[in-house]
Length: 66
Image (cartoon, rainbow, N blue to C red; front, side, top):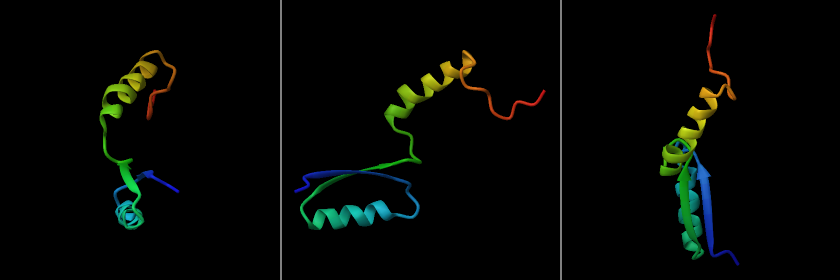
């Protein structure tokens, strides 16, 4: 029996909200994380690592025309 569920989805269309209510009817705790929103993890981990990778040329810069 499931006790909790984590759903990662985009905010449009609101499928995650429908799934949250369906799981709540079954008594299952549901956490929803939206991929198009910036979280603290994005802000403090992903963005600094991405910047370092660009600075060390590990990831090529996009739309670089020379």
